[in-house]
Each structure stands twice: as C-alpha cells, then as structure tokens.
Length: 324
Length: 306
Image 1: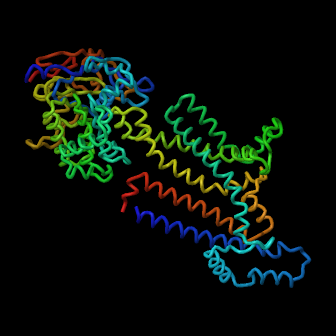
Image 2: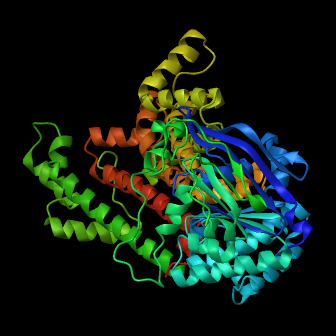
Image 3: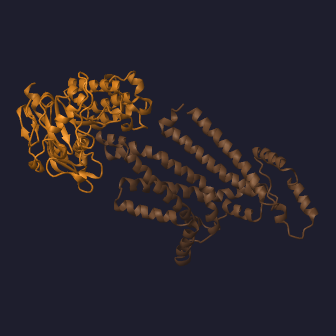
C-alpha cells in the first residue's frame, strides 16, 4: 500500500445522531475513509450504520438530526453545510447507492433521464451530451443494448439491472466516495456477487473509495480493505480487515465472526450471541454490549475508550479478548 | 396503450348501457306519470289518450327497446309538460350550467392543487395548518349554507353583488365561488396527502442524494407521480359538474339544467328526468375515461402494460 492511500479523504469524529423523543441512534462514532479503499461498515439492523452514512449527506429522515460531531471532507465539514452547498457534494463528490434499486428509481422517468440529470446538474452537460455519456456508463455496468435501454423505465428492468443502473448513476460524475447501503439485499444470491464485483472493479479502476454498509461479513472479507464494526450506535472495533478478522479484540466482533456458518467444518449448531440488542430506550450505562458479554465486569458500566493497536486497529472494551 | 384504452372504452360503454337500463326501470317504478300530471277528476279517456300518445300503454320491454333505439339516434323523447323535444330543452339550459360550472371547476383545480402541493411541501408549517384549516371548513360546509351566507354578506349587507338570477355579468360571482369552494377544498386535501406520500418514496431520497435542486425534485420527480391520484379526484369532480349544479342553481336561481331537473322531477316529466340522469351519468363516465387516458399518458407502467 502506498502512502497516498493512507490519506483520509473523509474523517468523521464524535458523530452523535438523535431521533425524536431524545433517542440517540448514533453515539460518538469516529471513522475515516481513505482514498481508493473499500471500507466495510458492519452491524446488525438498527445499529446505526445506515443513519451514520445518511447524515453525512444530510439525508436523515425528518425526525432525526445530528447533535454533535464533524465530518471533514474536501476541507469542509459536511455536517454544517447548508442545503445549497450540500447539493454540490451530493452526487458529484459523494454518491449514494441505496438498497432496493427498483424502489429507489423514479417509476415515471426513463433510465436515461435519471442517469443524465446528475451530469446535467453537476457538469453542465446538455441533454444530448449527457445521454451519450449515459450510454457509455450503462455499457460499462453491463446493461446490454445500452442506447436502446436508455428509453426504458425501471419497471421494465429486473432488480439486478436496476442496481446496475444505480451504480451507473452513482459513478456518473466520478465521485470521490460511493456509499453503498446494502446494495445487494434485495437481489438473488447469484446476482449479488456480480453486482459487488462490478462495484469493486469500477471503484478500483477509477480510484473511487467505497463505504459498503452491510451485515454480511462474507462481503466484507471478500471486498473490503478495512472494516468498522458498529453495535447499538457505537463503533466497537475497526481496522484492517485481516487484523480484525484474524485478531478480533472486541467480544462482539468475535461473537459475530464465530456465528458465521462455515463450509469447511461440520458443525451441529450455529453459534449465536446470547441475548438481544438493547433498544434505544433501554440503553445500559457504559458499554452497550455488556449485558450480553461473557467477560463483563463492574467497570463496564462506564463507557470504555478506544484502545489503538498497530495499523489503526482500534477497539472499545475494558476486557478485550486475548490477542491471537 | 391501444389495448388498455379499448378495454377502458368498452367498459365505459357498458356502464352507460347499464345506467340507461337502470334509469329506465327505476323511473317506471315511480308510478304512472300521466296520472300524476293530470288533475284528479280527469276522465279515463283522456288519460288513455295520453298514454297511447306517449307509448306508455305498450309492454315495458317494447318501451325499453324503443327508448334505446331512439336514444341511439339522438332522440330522447318529448317533454310531457310542453311537448318540446327533450334535447332542445336541455340544449337551451346547458350553456348556463357550463358557463357557471367550467370556470368554477378550473378555479377549484387551480386553487385546490396549488394549496395542496404547497401545504405538502411546507408540511407542519403555519402555511400548511392555515391552508388545511380552510380546506376542512370548505369541505365540511354544505353548499347551500355557504351560498346563503355569501348572499347574506355580499348581497344583503354589503349590497355589492346580485343575490340571484343571471341578469348581470357579476351575477356569476357568488354561485361560482360557492361551487368552487367545496371542490377546491376536497382537491386540496387530496393533493396534499398524495404529494406527501410521494415525498416519502425512496426515489425522492435518491433524487436528493444526487444533488438535484428542490425545484427539480419537486417539479420533475414528485409532482408527476403525485398527479396520478390528483387527476383521479379532478376527474371525479369533473363528473360532478352537472350534478353539483342542482343545489347551487336552486339557491341562486341560476337558469341551468340543475333547476330544470328539479322542476322536471316535481312534475314527473319522465323523458326530461331520464335524459338528465343519463347526462349526469355520461359526464361522470366520460370523466372517468379521460382520467384513464391520462393515467396512460403519465404513467409508463400503465402505458406499457400488455
């Protein structure tokens, strides 16, 4: 890895997100995205991973708001930008690919129009030039007969094809970062792999960073350079994928990895993590994982700080798993 | 699209036939029109004469077939009251109804959709609450009551507008406002909820994530989608143009088909009532068909369906 690749292009610090009724969905999250890397943001549903990414682009639902923190990108704090300035970042410098592409595309506008309008907005292209570029993009993401398909509508495409369209749309303005929010959850397993490969391949070829939100550790192992594990609104462990996977220090990460079904070993029952994720209303004091943690101690009632190991491997735990 | 429209057209024609038959039967059930019209002491011979004259002595099925047959040729019979053709009688009154109804409808559509959309875009603001309070009042207030209140204010107290009839160019103002208010209020409430629903769709978040301006998002991404339900209610309201005129024309003594209908019902003028019922039904069916055509134009999922 070269030095340039270590430069963070996005640094999120102390992010706190609150929903109506004083519910803290995200509490003190720090992470960074380096140029050209794939960062896997992992956690169970509701752990705050999507909300974290949506807040960066000012896309939180109306009942949610950022109460603290900063997200430095290109010399500015994304979290304090007004709508007008945010619009210059959205789609141009940071693009967003959502889950369920078929619902995420406008049903009454043609595929071509939806891809072209991003370029018309940000790059000042006229319609015919933007359409020409859209054909190239569709061709690149593997949509057959791109110039003909430009006039098609989302309902005439399969879910996988629509997700390819979303990727084309996200890459239209050559953004620095693409945030992919579980881009394959709505797709068949065979299509999932194709879409992920496509995304990784194009990102590599253009030097685009990807933040991959997922609950699938397999995807992270295969695609990501670094991983950040979230639990109940907190970042519990992060680092290079190899470090975190081979040497997990946080008990939650370890539990997650242990509960993956393995194909290379015969096992009678799947390992599970005992208990349930606490709801936002009944968050325990201190470490949110402590009620489910086998190694919990009295001091876990205070929030543990982050301990930093080699190569940016960090974890937040008083009583970490022994190093492998 | 052609197939879609042919099906819709066939359905419209079938509905029309059902309405014709239904109106025919129901109005025949309402009693012998000749007896109702004639004084009590008139001789049976006279009654028989009129029955034969109007064909009421024939079996019901024959009357029905004759009626359908001549209706297809554009002949809806003659008024029992003054022996004039029903078609020319209605043609004489219809312009007044349209002169009142069409501007009122356009007013309702323009105000209703604008209010609804603005309220949705400024959800939970003072603008939204104010507009929706007005809409609830407009919707809840009965037409005749609003009409009377307006007459009281503008004709009786302020004496600036005529209270009834169609005598001056300003005569149209009060009935038009009254007619437009309820329609506008219904359209506004409907447009607001349609727009709010669309604004919550995942593709609207995609549009924001692409960095599109609020103007482009609302006009190109949200509005056309919201138009589908909005056009539905606009079509319904269009169908109510004639029907809605009945009350208003009575309150304001407006010389349109609404009043003609009331008069004809009073006098059991069978042919006229029947023709007017058909006209109301036809206007609703036409409006529905136009709405279906519009769906096809705006929504590619409808247009491309096999």
